[in-house]
Amino acid sequence: MTDITSQTEAALAAIAAASDLDALEAERLETLGKKGWVSLALKTLGGMSPEERNAAAPAIQSARASISEALDARKAALEAAALEEQLARETIDLTLPAQAAPRGSVHPVSQVMDELAEIFADLGFAVATGPEIEDDWHNFTALNMDETHPARAMHDTFYFADKTTDGKDVLLRTHTSPVQIRAMLDQGAPIRIIAPGRVYRSDSDATHTPMFHQVEGLVIDRDIHLGHLKWTLETFFKAFFEREDIVLRLRPSYFPFTEPSVEVDVGYSNEGGRRVVGGHGDAPGHAWMEIGGSGMVNARVLEFAGLDPAAWQGFAFGLGIDRIAMLKYGMNDLRAFFDGDGRWLAHYGFSPFDQPTLSAGVGARA
Ligand code: DAH
Image (tube, rainbow, N blue to C red; front, side, top):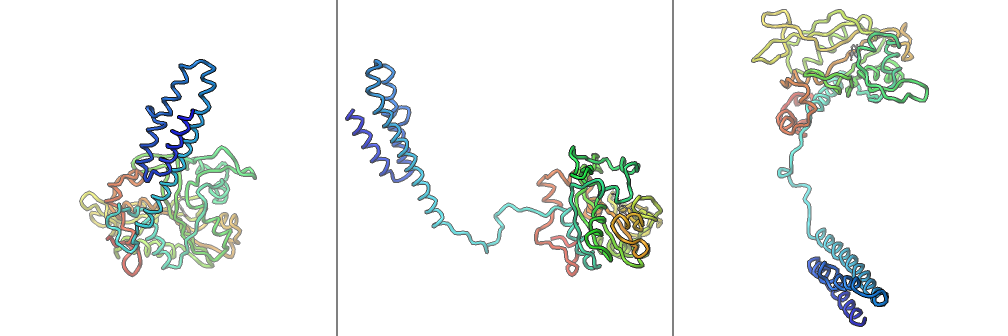
């Protein structure tokens, strides 16, 4: 009994005196370790008669409890002191260049979105946003696609199981066009916005991924016509591709939300197996490539968005951001955009310092 008491006292004193974690660990091994005296004493209980055990056990158990508690407390104190000491010793100079740190890069899609915003800002367009989780009224109905419209089926929509509180279907937006509706309802007219962002369709191959990016454009004013649309897109593509010889062709088409509707083609040529935008599509060695959809906003859409079609009119367009990024920077597989492969990002990514500006060039590469 007294033996255990004095041994415990000695152990507690040694624990309190332990000046570092190694010394403390040595003390733990000597007491509570497999071959420590407390553990060995506990083992002797098994060979005792019940009476002996009842007499001996409490002292050993309480020795174990107080030593274990002391070890924990001393460990916490030593760790706190070590941290204090480390914090006092270490300094970080945030003004040093970050060369030794692993380098991140700006994804080409983010870069192109910045380029788009910069170019369109210069033309007086603000950036508008909307939710990626949409309801079917904004995504379809208000864009002149009622429940029975065949275009709804063509969108390969991802639906949620739940509906909105007022009974609308909830879905991942299939295009950025619902932002047109939201912007008109919010801001009224006149309006001049672009809306870049993610869109979702249940589709996947070399040129389709279930998530991709679009940019929507919308201009509503008193006497806007298709000529303004063509000039705007031409001016945009000249700045974006940084060449003056961009030629666009508007081809009659159909979208429920525009009337008339046109598909926009751009002239290009093949250079070294790569499509290079520029030149007239009918010129020798050239061809046309579809680059987006557009048209004059359908009067029904204006009505859904709370505008009087007798007073207001305008154009809208939708472009695939990933597609124009691939064209500009020469990538060929859309899926690589979303693989998160560090080597691809190191090759095609941009320096965070390479901010697109109109003065320095929106396509400058570091
Ligand atoms: N929302 C269309 C799509 O995703 C693209 C589009 C076409 C947008 C014509 C427009 C437009 O604003 O006028 O297929």
